[in-house]
Structure formats: C-alpha cells, structure tokens
Length: 208
Image (cartoon, rainbow, N blue to C red; front, side, top):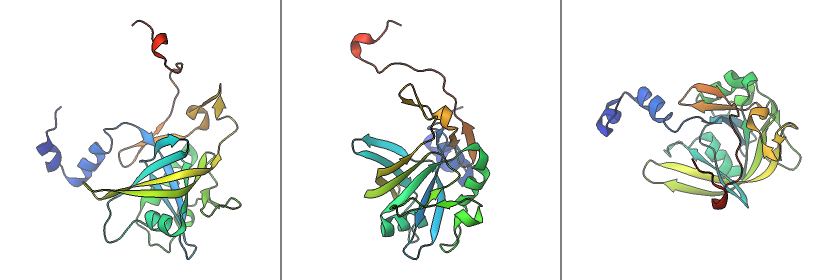
C-alpha cells in the first residue's frame, strides 16, 4: 500500500489524523496536569512528550495548533510556570482518555474523569495520584513551529517520582513501571521489554 502526498491530503480528516498520528510508532502516554491563576485544575492526554537532554534534565512536548483559543494546558503553563507529566497505567486508561474532551476551562478533568489531584509540598501544579511514575516540571522555553502553528514547550524536571521497582540493574525498566503507550488518537499499548544491550563503543561492535 502506497500513499502519495496527494492521497494523504485527500483522506478525510479523521482517517488522516489516525494514520499520520500513528506512523511514528508507539509513543508515551501521559497526562499533563496544570492549574490556572484562579486555581482551576486541568488534565489532558499528551502523546508528544520527548526527552531533550539530561543535564539539565529537559523534556519537550508539542502543544497543538496555536489558534485564537489556546489550549488550557498551554495557557496554564504560561500563567503558572509549572506543570506535571504523569504516566498512564492500565487501571485508568479509560479515565485518562476522556480527558481529551473539550471541557470548559472551569471544569476540572480530574473531577469529571474521576482522577485524583495530588499536590507535592512546594510544587505549584497538580500530579495524578493514581499514577506511580510522574514528573514535576518548571517551564523554560516555548518555540513556535511555523510550518503548522504548533508550539514546542520545554520544561526542566524538578520532581521525579518513581515506583520502587522501576530501577533494575541500574536501568529504568518501563515494563516494571506498568506504563502504557499510545498510537493514533485512541489506541493504547502495553510495554514489554524484549532485549537489553550494552552502551555502544566502536571497539565493541560485534561482527554481524
């Protein structure tokens, strides 16, 4: 099956979203928690979270098209300067998925989708209590992506909360964390560790 640029452009909107959103493979499934200056909390599914660097510990995520009505998540990050990224686990996939509905800013997805706000001392944004793997970030930079009007939001990790079983043989074992992945708009996957290999040095590359 081959799709040309013309074929892709002529797909109906939903089919195009589902296909093109899936071509990069399984992505991390996260809930991003924010709060505005009136203390309204917000929670939204993001599959565009990506590692940008380890020192400092920077994480990027894409906020969807910048229109006259910015997403509540981005507005809240701009107002407050802090936000959380919380892994999704199988026990609450359905609750997490429905936070993607376009609720009014005064409606908290935590309450509406039966998830629990959790605040950590000294941190200004809500975590998801049901998640056992979560990060608290301080906003650092926003980069406009001109070709499609999206925004790369960059934050630095200030809080990192992991389950006790997450570190195995000095590595972070994502299968042990029971975190899930997402592809397209609405399909969730379990993560399973297949193989482990050493850090690669040229002198240690085997013959194939």
